[in-house]
Structures are given as C-alpha cells and as structure tokens.
Length: 126
Image (cartoon, rainbow, N blue to C red; front, side):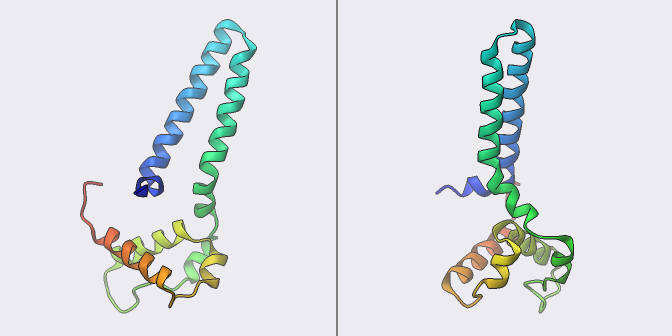
C-alpha cells in the first residue's frame, strides 16, 4: 500500500520540500529578524534528518569494495541491466551486514527477490 515511500522520487520530493521550507524561513528571518523563524529552521532541519536518515543509511551501508566483491544475483544470465537493477535494489534494501547474515532460502527473501525482479523488468513510465 505504501510502496511509494521506498521510491527515489519520493525521497527527492521530500528533499526539495525541505529545501523550499528552509529557504522560505531563512528569507523571512532576514526580512523580519524574528526568532520564531530560527525555531522553524531548526525544527525543519531536525524533521528532515529524522525523515531522511533511514533512506540514506541504505545508500551508505555499503562500501565500494563490498559492492565490487558482492556476487551478482543473476550470474547465470547475460542481462546486465537486470543484474544492475537487482544489485541496486539489494543495496537500497539491506546493509552489508544484513545481507551477509540473510537467509537466502527464507520465504521473505524469496518474496522480496520476486518483487524486485518484477519491478526491474517493468517498463513503466519511470
């Protein structure tokens, strides 16, 4: 139901929204010099960090060396676009430690893999 929360476009829109809100408050503060705008800036920055931190931990949870060492999901096929898409989905969904400890025979992983593969094969609008 809330699959849009995991999309990159949702993250980008949140970042744009926070930048607009902060820039508006900065502009208003320099015009009026009221302390309430500083409070708004601090609260907006705090909320932005709280809201966006989980998204960024998935991106920085893998070092470049770990990404290179990781075996691709589809070593038996030659579809490199699909392989890259599945690898990126893995990097976004799991940290390196979680992926190493993951039981690849579990039903949760198989369901995630099936959904990720369908999303990668989907030729949608985006």
